[in-house]
Length: 358
Image (tube, rainbow, N blue to C red; front, side, top):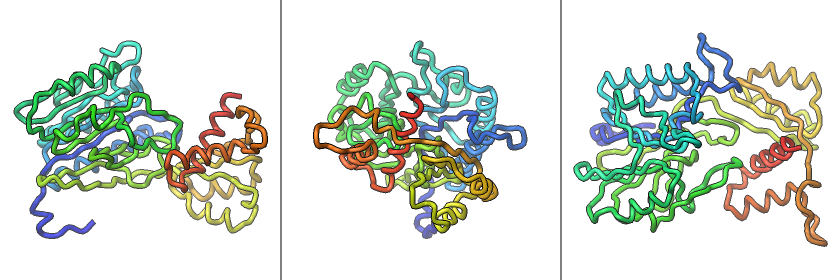
């Protein structure tokens, strides 16, 4: 992205990031120099964020929750790699502030917060807090969402600069996964009109809705995150927000159809999958020769799954309604306002879940 002289002179401000889900993933986790490959992907992206901060004279990074993927028993390798990366950044003058997310608290022990060790070199917010000096309001994830609403309702009337929270805003989009919003906050409950800017973590799709910015996840976590614009937000001193994209291996999902027997369709797939984490969903086993060609195309990871349309498992339709599972899913995503190009991914996840349950 080219930058004008005036833009260069306005360096500074701060970075907003969220939903790192740092983990030593098994899928595509083949070691690179002795380190889990997916963990290497994440640390590489985080180093890009740190390098960007140095180049643009940014001294503060707000991380809005879900540092780790697991809520307990965090892999030692993931813990060590992240600590070393962050500590190196802090030594060079970059300050981090962490807001506890739902993945940073144990389900059975919600007072056990896994990011507390970061207090050795950063600020960690585990309880809601209104900083009257900086005019920033911090609202971490709490399983008791009513207490969060009560805290926001009781805020004193001031000219607040920022609201930073981890949670779900009514009207925001999750993305093509089987996750369902559970505890949505409304714009009224948040009192958005009281803040100059609002940033939130928890939803992995980058979006700007009702005045709230979600930076989205730093890199794609799984096959439910097919977006190619993962990264973080640079908030400039004048308040403008610049999305910044980092480098990471993309996930790709292909759903085999009957007309895919045509060679030209498979050629396009073969030309497209180099370096990607690929999942192919097929109703019939693929020809071994084709599988070999797919492997020779050098995908980073190749997962071929045999799926069948389990329409019989769907509750019986009303008389005269001949909808299949596929059409039901398509109808659902249309009603939810999901982009048409992602409907196949929803369908694939539905089929995958049904296969898993049978």
